Image (cartoon, rainbow, N blue to C red; front, top):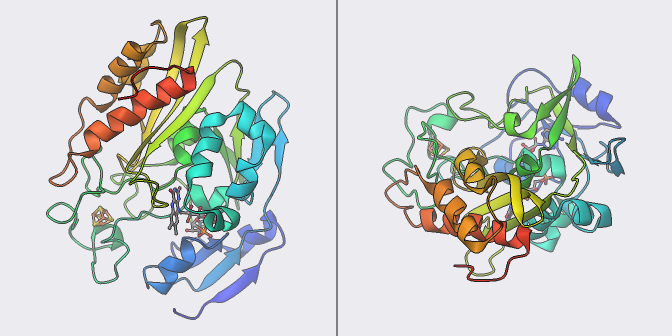
Length: 329
Ligand SMILES: Cc1cc2nc3c(=O)[nH]c(=O)nc-3n(C[C@H](O)[C@H](O)[C@H](O)COP(=O)(O)OP(=O)(O)OC[C@H]3O[C@@H](n4cnc5c(N)ncnc54)[C@H](O)[C@@H]3O)c2cc1C
Ligand code: SF4
């Protein structure tokens, strides 16, 4: 690992002051579950790490009945928070599935949302791919079984954060703080496609930090996340879906449906949402929405299998949120 300086920032203000405008030179360090691996593999070689574990570690009610979750809250603390579990099942179910207990004990909400892609070409210093300033994406003609089925490149990563998917389904905002002050960004506008930012995955500038996830009051929304993994592996999901349903009696008034591990950003499907709106909450409706969600997928040579898996994740997430029994296939 290349030698680096270390700043133990006492608070948000000190952390911002210790970061800088040059991409990759000054990096925030939270639990280190992702960043230290990237440094040991020589993928990132920052001059300075800025400890951000002293950012807000609390989960607090907002004045409008929602929750504000600090970036330094660990995934374990989120999973064990009774209000979060009751109000936002989709978020807590996703957090509970991340990695292993050890990873959830160290990994933070801010680090999870800002973790870098797992594409094996990106993670291997021998491959100078588009994302690292090279001239080609090796996944196009290479090993692409875990890559995107939506989005059409030019980089075909899937977004790695499990929390990002329910954050969008639940209508979260992210608070971003930088030298110019703070701003709130809708979760669905935070993650950006490679044609907008090839060298990063978000709208965050190098000298900004994500400090909070702010969730609106859930009202009567029913939410759930369903992930499909290799057996019970602690590895990232092959496909996942988070849904938030606004249900009146047995009729779905509206829905937000987001798939994960299928595109460079969490992939919201308005076609699936329209397939649910005004319809009865039933297995048939869930299946129709799941079909709509994967309609238009363009798998690569090695990942056609992800299309039915993503469809199943959407169907099961709707059935789980709605408390439906029946055929989960
Ligand atoms: C075996 C294994 C399995 C895993 N499975 C999953 C999984 O299923 N789902 C999943 O989502 N993740 C999974 N992970 C990834 C893990 O959850 C993340 O690495 C972890 O959550 C990152 O959090 P951290 O606090 O350790 O971040 P760090 O490693 O400290 O930081 C990660 C990145 O975020 C940046 N960063 C940190 N905090 C902030 C902030 N406040 N504002 C802006 N940028 C920030 C850092 O600079 C760095 O680039 C897995 C990891 C492993 C090793
Ligand atoms: S998918 Fe993206 S990160 Fe992976 S090889 Fe292609 S350009 Fe690089």
